[in-house]
Image 1 (tube, rainbow, N blue to C red):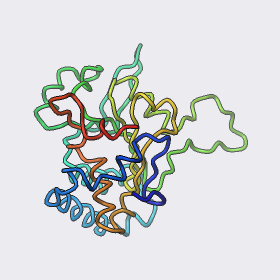
Image 2 (image 1 turned 180 degrees about the vertical axis):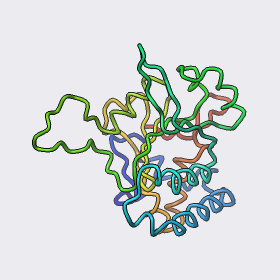
Image 3 (image 1 turned 90 degrees about the vertical axis):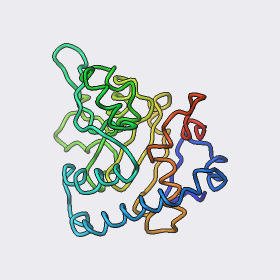
Length: 232
């Protein structure tokens, strides 16, 4: 797999050798499912291209691009989920993804606690279209009081607080995968430019899909998932 503008395996998070041989996996030939996801993402992007070419807000990015993409990737998800973090403080998770609706409904009695996340697939920190995942720059007269944290730091905090194994940053275009064990390093992740992959060869979209779709995170009878097996 050629890395560059479309893919970045920083750290590395995933095994370069295994990424190079994705075409040899059984999942690679699932063109009926992957093709349907490709068409849905393409149609969504083309429908909202004018909006995305402007300056969409985080809410617009989520509604018009992230939500339909998550559906195309097969996820059931819940949005803006609270989790108590001590005292009267509450953190919010932009998206919590689940294998199916049944798993989500089973978790509802544990909402606001780490138990709610135990059967989830991932937590997602969502940014506005074009966000670089870096912390906002301080103005010249501003003092860094420690509150100006990056989305990467926020996602690392959510992974540790919820106990979720995988976390994703996305601005609707770029998708960045983190694993809880290496997330504190901040620079160990796998990133894909979904739109560039979609506009490139179909095989590049397949690589994006195989890393980020729901099925890749589901554990088999041995207790491992497709993504687990790709880890470095």
